[in-house]
Length: 156
Length: 151
Image 1 (cartoon, each protein chain N blue to C red):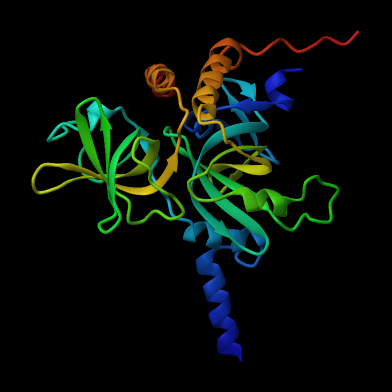
Image 2 (cartoon, rainbow over the protein chains, first blue to last red):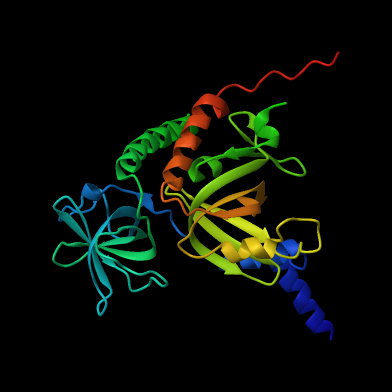
């Protein structure tokens, strides 16, 4: 019994003084919460070139465009903007129906396949039919300027 | 009184996560010297973890992921609507707007959520960004007003 108590004391000392408090329980919950990187909002041309220079693989991106086609068997979708296309791997998405011609927003990680084709492995997707894409793209530029200024302020 | 002290400050995630915390008890938060105690954010739910007493979720708006916590054991408090109703709205991939208190947990800022609204307007995200930028430029970036003198 004594050794068991000593073991508990040692364990508590290792974990810190608040292990048994509500905050301690929250700590453990927080540890299990996945730490995701934000999906950087990108414009179509930034990710559809054959070897995107600015995007190393596995970077999280957020992209919005028209759906060109969707294959139920492979779970691969193609979104299009102008003449450029981007492959979207939708196998992790649930509760979303795909309609060619509709506008979708995807968040996921960008991978470059062996044939130098960009594929976005989507972890989140939603339909955004009705979105004003002109306003959306203009706002992205304003946001980038704001975020650059914010970063400068932080660095100063 | 400074409006950012008692109102909900509309902030982008990157801006929210860079709020300065003071080591007082309870901790207080500020942006460029102006106190911020409540915040409003909008983003896509990219992760959630529901437990009997709380719901934790992450809101991604492209500039960062804001951790949000919604307590579910407040059902007997006079609150309308109850937190269970709000929790039911939070689903992966939804664009949601939250309002709540700015709190810290293990050195990370988070929002202790009081209200959740699922945005159905596809332009709501864009409009929220524009409102955040305008408020930052026209209000939050300005120097804090001088304290009112007592007569």
